[in-house]
Image 1 (tube, helix red, strand yellow):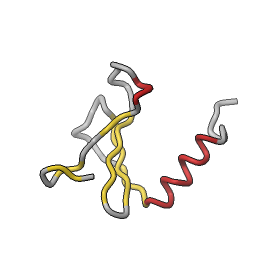
Image 2: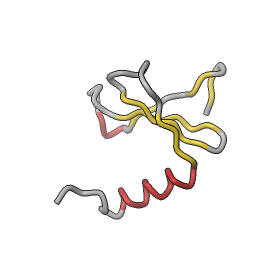
Image 3: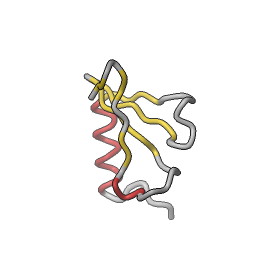
Image 4: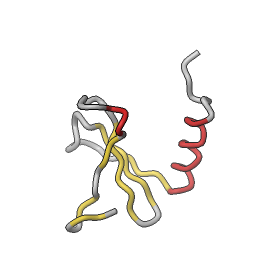
Amino acid sequence: MVHGGKPLWRRSSKSGNENECVEVAVEPGRVLARDSKRPALAVVTFTVGVWAEFLDAVRAGELQNP
């Protein structure tokens, strides 16, 4: 979503009051991600399909550390 011409950033409710998390914004056809500690630095852009595959892998536990 866009608000005032800028991405509307949000973070997981599971991150609590900590600033050490990833924030995401959804725009038409893509998902943006950035480091909440350094929001002015680079933004990583994903297609909606790639982002959906990433979320599926997270939910399936495929990205757990051994």
